[in-house]
Image (cartoon, rainbow, N blue to C red; front, top):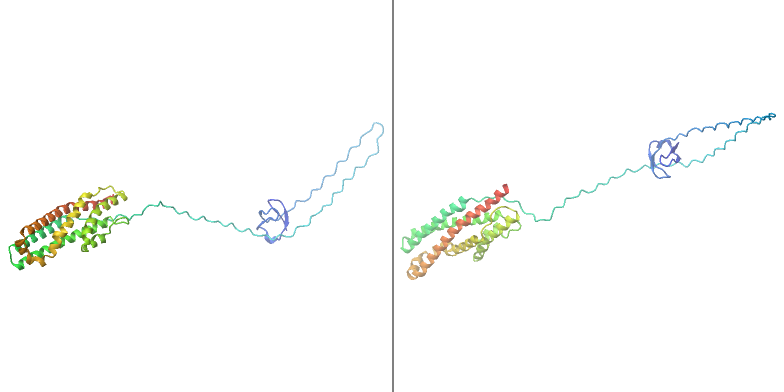
Length: 316
C-alpha cells in the first residue's frame, strides 16, 4: 500500500496493518498518520489542432497532411522504496515542576502567650490576713518569753506563728512560679522552676532572691516588647526595693522564726543581759517585716495586673 507524508509529500510503500498509525517520515523526520494514497489518473493530452490550408489565388496547392502527434514519452516508474517499519511516537512525558515552598522570613519564633491569670484575692488579700496573723502570734510569743510565761503556751504561740508564716511564704513562692510562667519563652533568663528551686538552697538563696526578683521586671518589659503588647512596663525601682525587703525579712524574720524552738529558752536571758542589742534587733526585724509587708502588697498587685494584662492583650 502506498502512503504519502503530509508534510514533505514523499511517497512510501507500507503494510496495510499500519493504516491509521502515526509514524515519523524517514525523509523529513516529522510525524504523520498513515493513510492510503490514491494517485490521480493520467489525463491524455488533447490532439494538436490541424493548420488550415492557405488558399492561393492562382492554384490550390495539394493538401498537406496533418502532422502526427508526438509519441508520448514512456513513463519511467521509480522503484518503490523498501517498506518502512513505522516507529510509534513516544508520548511526551510531562514533567511536573516541584512545588515551590514558601520561604518565611528568618525571625525568632516565640511561643504563644499563655492564658494565665493571677488572683489578687489569693496573692494580696489572703496573704495580708495570713501575714498579720503570723505577726500577731509571733509578738504574743515574744511577750510571753519576756514575761516568763508558761512554757507550753509559749511553744504553742511560736508554733502557730510558724504555721501562718510558712503559709505566707508558700503563697509568695507560688506567686514567683506563676509570674515567671506567664512570660516563659526561649529568651527569658529564668525558668519558673529555677525561680523557686534556687530559693531553697542555703546561702545561695541570698544572692538568688536579689537577682531573681529584680530580673523579673526587666524580663517582663522585654517580653512585652518582643511580642508588641500594648501594656505598661513594670517599675524596676519597685522590684529592686521588693528584692531587698524580701532578703532582709528572710534573714531577720524567716530564719529566726523557723529556729525559734532552739533559742526560746534563751530569749529572756538575752533581753536581761543584752537589753539594748536585743531590742535593737527586734526593732530592726519589725522594720524589715513592715517594709516587706507594704512593698510586697504593692508589688504583688502590680504583678497580678501585669500578668493579667498579657491575657487581655492576647484576647483583644
